[in-house]
Amino acid sequence: SASYVTIPCLTKLPEFTKVTVLAAELGRERSGNVIKAKWNGVYAAVKSVLTNKEDAEYATTVFRSEVEAYQRAGAAGLWGVAVPQPLFFVCDKEKHQSCLGTVAGEPMPQDTSEWKAEELEQAKESILLLSEAGVGLRDIKPANFVKLTDQSSAKRGRVVAIDLECYFQDTNAVELPLWLTQGCSSLISAG
Image (cartoon, rainbow, N blue to C red; front, top):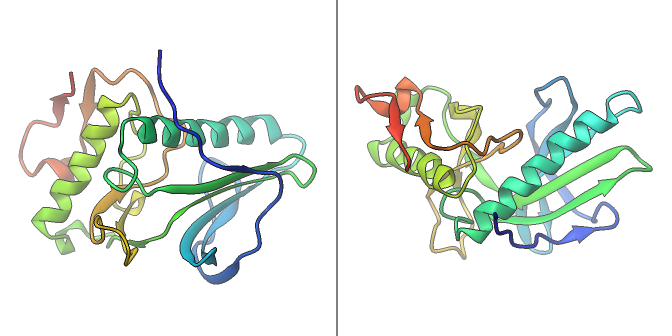
């Protein structure tokens, strides 16, 4: 049986100050965005998923799977190590909106040749640690990694995974993309 830790579930979207747009659109045929915002004195990445009545069930399932993945990661002690720490989530069925707030990070360059060897190693370690915790990532690409920037964190500067939607639980073997293996076998046992 999997263990989880609690992420604060808010009844409505919290008040925050928008700083910038990090992603203007979401994948998987959903509308929404990710913004960087100031919330309770912390910079947060706030992912908002908007739905309509036709796709509400699908979008809610995808959103809940991401919250569950963060809970699993937290139970394994991986907040700030393999993923950013989640701050809150909201499922507002009336407004057809779901939000997940995590500690913000700086997006990593899309060109992985610009990454330092240590950053590549941290990204790979994040994937493997999440896999050991029962969170297998489906969408492993440079856009789904950030460098933590929280000044108060001992993990400042660490590269961690984001976008944990639709993770899979069969994590006996992790397939790493070529850009992370640097000539190694792309199938690494996690077990």
